[in-house]
Length: 314
Figure (spheres, rainbow, N blue to C red):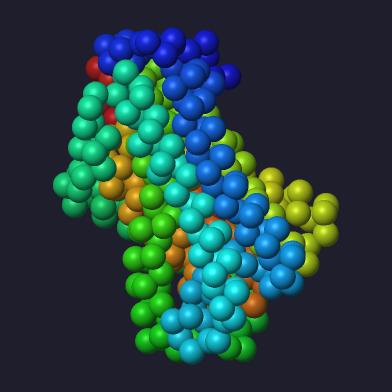
């Protein structure tokens, strides 16, 4: 599925010639070992500490952030272990930096240049916003029609302030994953693959990397093992769609900054639904709509490629 790959000594010219780099080649394996190793040590450590202290769900999630910012009273142990868990999110950032410096196919300073590439055009940012609305608005409408409003739903002002703060938090926490997943792994896998195959290569390993966090959340929700397996499958399918979407944008911009913004935005906006409604089917609906978007993009790019081959106008 991932190709035979190129040796670690492959240079920049080989990477850009269209030769397919292997997911499990040593440069990328180095990244995965660092990303998984660092993150899982902190996440599993927090999980074990939670069990030992009886603190419960310790993952630094939107509910805890809301309590800290807007009048909740979480225990000191809960906050401490949640911060310990939060540190684990920086595994891909560390792995991406280390792997980029060690990989001869990445010129010195290239990752930093792509990280600071902010000016990708208003149209690109507008398209990100449009896709976010396509995913969010129908999900919100369907959820409002079939789900019960939350008893403790925040007011509009509080909700907007929370979403703004949470977005900023996401930029400097979960968003930093993009230095590794897009800035290194996607960047080195794209030549010879294109965004679709690259998304399918990156998506599964990106999804599995989340599993300690996601499983702990599912356990805190009281899910049975069979339901957890099904939920993990659904979560992974959604992550693959996001990996494809991110690869699509990255292939066109080579902007890690844009990838961080996309990650933070897609983590933040759907929280509106979670905070406003009980038992929301938002995750399933959002994943279906996200897949509809990436399938549309695939169809469009395939038509453009065929038109380019034939000299026709799309």
